[in-house]
Length: 144
Image (cartoon, rainbow, N blue to C red; front, side, top):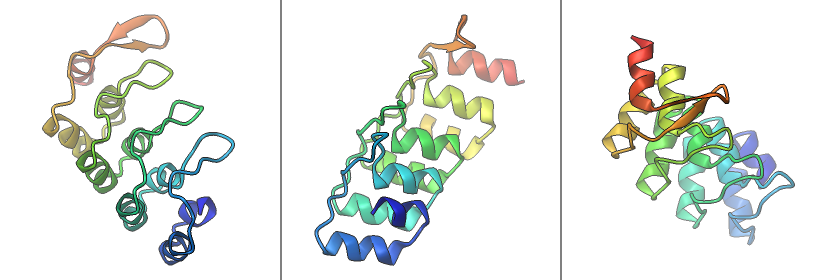
């Protein structure tokens, strides 16, 4: 299932689910098929996996969630789908950077708008290059 999700093969994912593959199985890095599909913005696979019961709460061993990777890559529709299923809008990655702050720095305005619409905290603190603390609010000001 992971290979099919990674390469965007929706019909293969569907067939594998019908054959009994579990949507929450993790690879050696703790990634699920949902995380892999979200990373490349394969919205139809994200939707299929969510409908099959894939969890939006699984965190990989590298501190990545389906939402954080979809957001980091600017995949707004995948972000919307994941948020609609209860993905943690205020998730803080291992580097201690809130998802919203990452999106402000990356310039993914449509993803920022979705996160704010879902009431992501504009005050959650993250580390900036491991030294200073910054928030999405200060990141927005810095970007101006």
